Image (cartoon, rainbow, N blue to C red; front, side):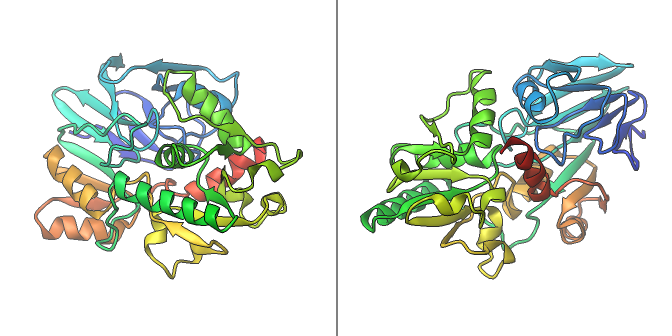
Length: 338
C-alpha cells in the first residue's frame, strides 16, 4: 500500500490529504517538532504535540491556527489514524504514526536514543514503513553518556573559574540550550541569552521543569557574569555582543565536535560532542527495533546509512527533503529574537 508520497512541498499522506513537516505552504501541516527546518511559516493549519504548541507560537506567530494533542492520543484525519509518539529529540518532539487499512507508516522526525532528563524519551514504534533521519549516520559518531559529558562540562567550568574566566557555552536556543542547563546544573549561576529565555518560558509553560537561570541583557552591565556560566545561541559566536563578556572561554556544544578538524569549531576554546540526534549505534538500534519492511532515509548521511542498511538485509532507499539545515534555521530565528 502506498500511504505516503515524497513531493516538492513535503511528505504527503495520500489518503489523509495532509503533509508532514512541509517546507512550502499547505492546508494542513502535521509538525514533528519546533526546529525551524521542520516547522515553517505559511501553513493554513498546524497539528502538533501539546508541548510544541507554545514553541510554534513564539517561532512562527501568535496568530497561527494550531491544534495540539498528547502522546499516544490518536485522531482520525480523512480515515487515517494519526498519533504522536516521543522522539526524544527536544521537548515536544514526536514521531508521527499513520495507520490506514492496517498498514502503518512512521515518520521519525529528528530523534535520539539517550534520555537527556528533559525531553520525553524515545518510544519505539513498530511499523511497516519507517522514515528515518541520518544526521550522524556514520560509524565515527558515538556519543558519551549524559553523565560523562556532564562531568566533562562541569570540570571545564571549574577549571575556568579557577583561572578567573567566564564559561560561555554555545548551543541552539531550542533543545541544546536546555540540555546544557541540565548538564551543568549546580555548577554555578546560569545566565542565558534572551532568545533562549523566551523559549525556556514556553517550555516551562507546559509544565517542564528547567534548572534555575537568569536572563542576560547585553545592553546592561555584563560584568556580573564574571566567573559564572553563560549560554548563547550560535548566531552570537564571534559577535560584538559576546565580546562584552569578561574573560570568556567559549565551548561549542554540538555532535560535530566529535570531529576535531571540523570547520564548525571556528574560534571556540573547547568543544563538547553533545547532540540531540541519534549516533550511529542509536540509528541502527532504532531502525531494527521498528521491524519495518521498508526504510526511507532522509536528511544527513543518506547514502552511507541507506547503503549499510541494504548490506545487512534491511530494505532501504534514499529520499531528498529540505530537512537538516538546523544551523541556518536557528540563525534566522535568533536574528528575529535578539
